[in-house]
Length: 307
Image 1 (cartoon, helix red, strand yellow):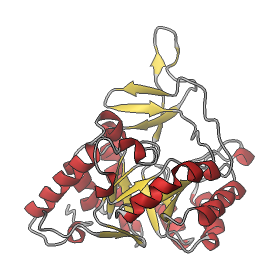
Image 2 (image 1 turned 180 degrees about the horizontal axis):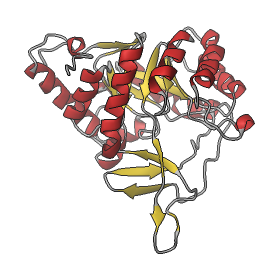
Image 3 (image 1 turned 90 degrees about the vertical axis):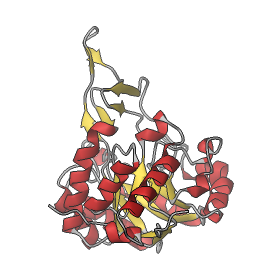
Image 4 (image 1 turned 60 degrees about the vertical axis):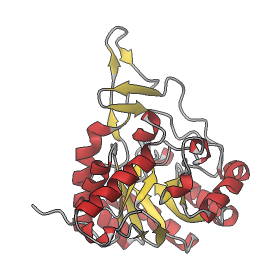
């Protein structure tokens, strides 16, 4: 048992410890119960869901690259109603076991985001809060991401803020971080999640075609970690609301870097696909690191980076 208090508060979402899982890499958590007790984690973030089902992109949708993976899944999901019908009982039980459930909301327009959030408000009492993924393409704006500028990001947040009293996190794109973070804070976000995947390409030199069904895809894994740490630090210096650090966390040391840079919590993503029991291992390593720092509370280490 750790001698350090590991409890944290992510914008109103109270967590027993800072370690959660990143949306899209963990299903709803039930898929990992055969490897460990998911209730040990501070939180999980569910697969992004829209108001109506999305088919996602054609295969191939995932490929490995040096020190990472690329994906072009396209946020395939069954829609909020179907998701809650199938997984709601499990997620309610998980919340009762002490693991906060954060439901991710996606949409191609402000109206779609609003519809999905309203459905979650009605159907998901188990949700401790919501993560809004503003990297979805805006079909009315030629495919630009909904959060492609600080102004667009704030517009989404302002529209959603009146729809729920529960905490709302915003999952930011890895660009214009300080400006976008400030705009989202001003628009009412309770916390920020960053970073999302980085746009990238991988070409099969034999066929001269993309290794995926689309020319570009989202890059994640260990190779993006130093970039993500820098962006978390930038956001921490720009806003007063908590930050959830995401990006290439493979060890407790990686999680500790995020916390020192200013993150209150850390989400494990690609590591879940490499080693299914990564999250509890990372939590144990983080606890040992916190003890080695001679503190009584993990919160004492948030933003403790010194240049």
